[in-house]
Length: 319
Ligand SMILES: [Zn+2]
Picture 1 (cartoon, rainbow, N blue to C red):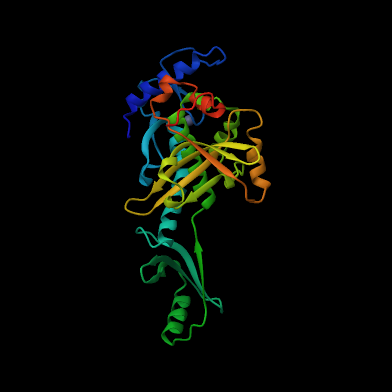
Picture 2 (picture 1 turned 90 degrees about the horizontal axis):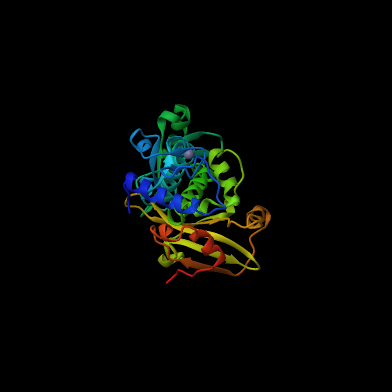
């Protein structure tokens, strides 16, 4: 479903005009030939901005992880958040794949003996076990020699391996960002009329701050969550919590699929409390119900407030 940026512009422009037709919505400037950046809200764009590259096609999730061009975002958000957030996801997925013996990558790490000799290594699993490669350029030659000598003399009793998974928190922020943009892609500007999403946009602009609870972001094996739930869902958790639950896949070329589920807050006052609680509450067993909504990309032109309809269950559109 890769879209052409010009047809995307038409599509989002129409959706924005339908949403703005509601008398409760106030938005400047008052013109009907624009779209806004769903990530910063600071900028509005006309179709000319695509040609001059200040409005850009955004792949969700990133294109190296199988994403499709489904949203238009401003150049600043696309570039800054691409390098400060999304780039960590690519490394993280590479690391997960290497630990499962898939893909071409390695995990960085250290190999250390009890007497303090240390060499930099690269690590991955393979069919027969582990593959550990030394990185001579990043290691002290004396330490390499020492450890090699110990191996030669068969005197190694214990080796400590430390593996460094690339910044998992930033990687999860990238998954949160993809979930937000996917929900926008399917539900449109009506989805963005939700005061509880403001902290998410602030989080994307300030990835170094700890705002959104990482407990709301889950990575599964695909067999754990059925294909029929991929897309937009509402998640109910007893006794009364409710969130949007966006499910999508990320995958390096020819490697394993990772299925991702992300909770996003609903639009009503009080819906964000769930997320405040998530940070402090320890995991406890509770009943979880997932309702799938079979929403097509085009539906937001017929139902501009589909996000709120789903939330309030005024209309059931699942098949
Ligand atoms: Zn922006």
